[in-house]
Length: 494
View 1 (cartoon, rainbow, N blue to C red):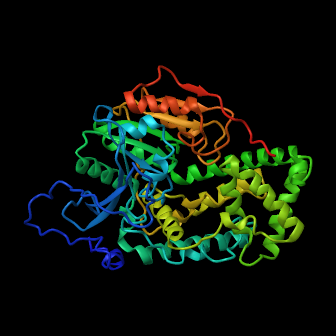
View 2: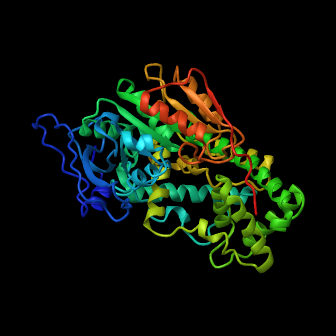
View 3: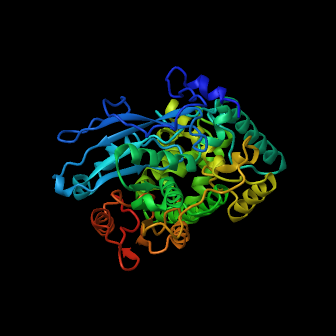
């Protein structure tokens, strides 16, 4: 296979890609990892905690261990407990695909139960293609970063053709910028990187906390390395589906969540002044979007509006801000109250969006154009104005590398894992957790009932969830049955 020139050129200055070993060389040595200072992107925790960072060299293609190599950036916050309390290393991943895990070791650790912080070294890492680990680039990505962006919801044949054309351009841009690296920024390759980190740390097993896409990564590791899988908490579970199918399921869940938001806003009419019924609030919402579609304000149009809505619907603590933003626009014509949640501001977001598409399209077959248009039309029949922001795998329709198999997830040889889910999470609907559990015999599902947010363990402040997960991580205690915890319900307002 030719050397991936586009990647090599992009990474040469950072020395992230090392030369291939000569054919007569001995088998590659075991990976090494030395810790030192961290880049500025990693927060510096207060004493007595400390964070340290290092890099590990791994093959670009794990089926060719003597081929080109990349470096994966790793961070560590050591456990603070006594030696007798130590349980080893706990790798963490924040989701995405495309989320940077290097700073996450610090930010997530700060929210973990104290018993977990005392017992585990928390290990963050930037997955390949992300942040400090051979970052992916897709150039302009078919106009994704244009402000204002094109309306992301195609209505009618002409708009559908334009929508498909933008996806083709996005796929072309990724192929041009990333080159032959496209097949290798996959979840399966990242699972191998995780095992290399385990080896370099001298750990017999991989303990892992994955959130959102991190659950997909953890399940892929358990499928590939079941006998090296330790204690895994998979929080806000991505179901074992093709990425396009997952995106469609998510878009339907977002419609249900938005209806709940409309009703909640109406129940607080005195607070938000958007109407006293869900239908009235919906009409106000559509007025905002229609006006922005007709006349964007300072680069803020329907695409930016939908990104703001997508972000807000996933966490109930953001609902009041969304409702306030709708009211403010209707009163004074300014979208500023919505704008902070939507900006594409700098290389981190561009890298995230590129890595997101590249990983999804490397993980399995994408949809056909016929399937994509059919599914978009079906969603629009459910609601003429859906939120399609999360349908990132649509770009796989025209991807230049078309994998022939799906990423394996879970399996009967993996030990029991702990799955955690919010009952009404619209970003990773609970059906995904139930489906994945069937692939992981003996595993248990912890459900936060009457909750509507994405991200649960050490996130929602629920003692039942946090104590159950902490007991599993510390002692390997697997509940005898699924656990149902009482959730907070819908948010209150002042």
